[in-house]
Length: 301
Length: 301
Ligand SMILES: NC(=O)c1ccc[n+]([C@@H]2O[C@H](COP(=O)([O-])OP(=O)(O)OC[C@H]3O[C@@H](n4cnc5c(N)ncnc54)[C@H](OP(=O)(O)O)[C@@H]3O)[C@@H](O)[C@H]2O)c1
Ligand SMILES: NC(=O)c1ccc[n+]([C@@H]2O[C@H](COP(=O)([O-])OP(=O)(O)OC[C@H]3O[C@@H](n4cnc5c(N)ncnc54)[C@H](OP(=O)(O)O)[C@@H]3O)[C@@H](O)[C@H]2O)c1
Image 1 (cartoon, each protein chain N blue to C red):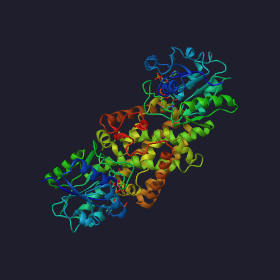
Image 2: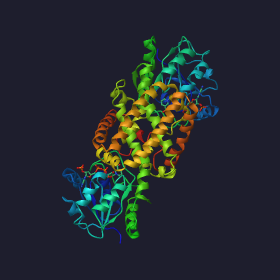
Image 3: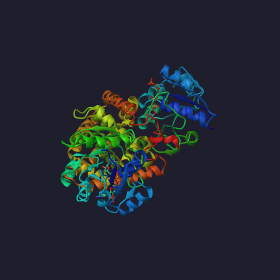
Image 4: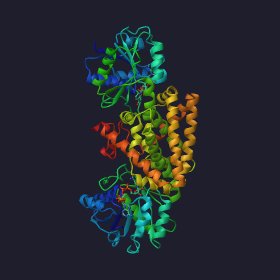
């Protein structure tokens, strides 16, 4: 039986985008939602992020056959506990958290006997809150499902089918592997961006206003991701600690090697690495995961 | 006397953009150009990057009152030597190199007795070559001039006036300070981006195809700048070694502190840094150096 009533808990960027995308692509699906913040619920009603915004988590899930938790990774356990007593027994419980191993553990602990299928739509922006969502966020993006062993195939198929209707491509992997892959493609890039932006704003010899004025030389690309939500990212680093620290170790090793090449004036080593990295960019553009226009569309306005 | 005949040496992204921008904004200025690569000269003729493409550097500068060297930083000395014997005595010699201290030294050494006014338009893309340039590259961007002591004020005014007509805002600073500022806002970001893209493409546990598929989580922002021209960037790191190594030292200190915070589970330290970095982003957008649309215009197509 396909999914007909979806409850969205947490109506920020991800939750709001899911609501809007369901309204756009799946008008047959009824949506309800809840957010802990009364101001967010108000904004969600005004933007019609879901069909009905409830004033309690329990109220929003009472009729659902799929519940999607769209809260920071550190809040997943609380969000799950708040619906434990009212969750319909056949409902699938899913989420959109950026790390998966700790999430699947806390959801299974909080909701024993329920079908838990964690998901991570690899799509986002640096904006957050109820005004940030848009229906197209998931189009052409991957959504990774990490169902624990023993999850019924038909439930996985139902959830996959829904994400496909929102425009996503589906991949299934285990939670530990997900956390390693995303440490590289998302968590470490964010950590590095936060660091360099922090470093640049704390210098004595270079003023903050100079950093801002000359940011078009490369720095501004980092500030975009370093403007992401602090709570969400704190939670990601605390909950995906091992994979993040492992990948960070590899990165600093490589950075040290490059530092040595610069110190020694080893132009060949630099040129060799800088040539290798271009190939990856080409593949990303070929596979539609980025835009090759020289200015990313900046010249449009 | 204002500038009337401009010679552009090196007809890639920067040289080509200058030629096109002059044609768009200063149709009264005559442009000539030269590139060491015959194929580039051919492409430059086809795209009409400058009014006349010459087959020798000497031919292109014979009538010029401003010569702009648009070659990699490591090639500046060679490019200057090639025009030494024919450069009109009153001509201004300028460039667009990404580092300035070594450039001003080598230009003054190669062209004694000439007015050398190094410049760095802080504008660029990851593309290079004669097909990459566009007339709007410099609009709303800063162009930094680093005139050595004793440069006549009227020559500085002439060069500034020309860059303003191309849409740039002008700042004047000394070459050493330029190199420190750009190490932070451009060179270190590129170095870090090259490193993380290199790290990600060399892992055993995560395949390259996974890195590409899930790049929308943040990684793709780094691949863009890590696709920049290898020769240009090798030269920048070799020629701005001291400032780059100094700033890299600060960055790795800060990264180590963050690593420790993650290892210890110190969420407050993470949250505090992640909050501070948002302010910089806001200022960059307010000052028109980037685009606040959630997707950078990616949804346009
Ligand atoms: N942003 C991205 O690019 C991205 C991409 C993929 C996945 N994700 C994941 O998606 C999830 C949500 O991120 P987001 O960007 O949508 O964040 P967001 O815009 O800040 O939205 C999260 C919302 O959840 C609310 N909330 C927090 N705890 C709650 C609880 N116990 N019950 C109900 N509502 C609660 C928050 O309210 P308060 O503001 O009052 O706390 C907030 O309105 C996170 O797990 C994140 O890792 C994010
Ligand atoms: N790209 C950016 O974002 C950016 C931004 C600001 C400043 N800059 C600076 O601008 C300069 C040019 O960069 P670009 O991006 O325009 O590079 P580009 O597109 O590769 O163009 C450089 C051109 O100069 C030619 N060339 C090399 N040596 C020469 C010589 N001795 N005489 C004549 N032509 C020669 C090259 O030919 P071959 O291909 O045959 O070598 C190439 O066609 C560099 O100093 C760079 O640091 C770049």
